[in-house]
Image (cartoon, rainbow, N blue to C red; front, side, top):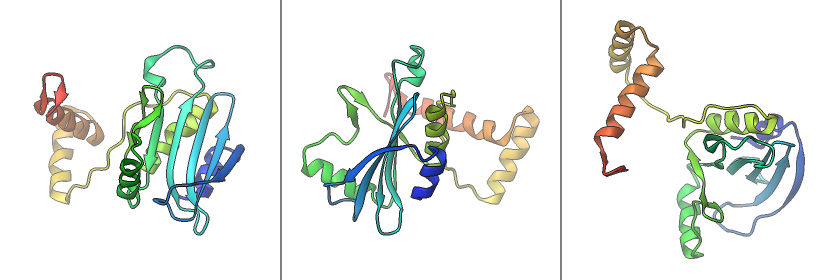
Length: 177
């Protein structure tokens, strides 16, 4: 993800920024965006505008009290995730904590982050499910497509069903094992 993608999605509503003090993201700068509905923050490279990390959260006083939408989301560039986690450990900082006892919902794809952040920022509702990239060979896609056709559902829905079944198989006493 690049800085220009965030700027466009957030309508260039930059409200602040500063240098970033940790070493895990080289040549990093912090930017804040704010609308009447949400806050978005990013860390990006001042050298090539690569986004290292981005988070988004609603303004609680504006949104209806709905637990599904009252969660902060964060995306971290996979090329820098280990460095971030290692530095957080060295600094004795919980890398998952957004504020108080609130944890981030980690997003896997930059597209998912942009979709959710843009919706929040504009006061629109968003799909709270987390997008997960799935890399399948052509034979598997064909088999899944045929099964989806038999069930009269989309390929995406078929994959979602399979993933949910696998998660449930690994769930023990309410948590994943």
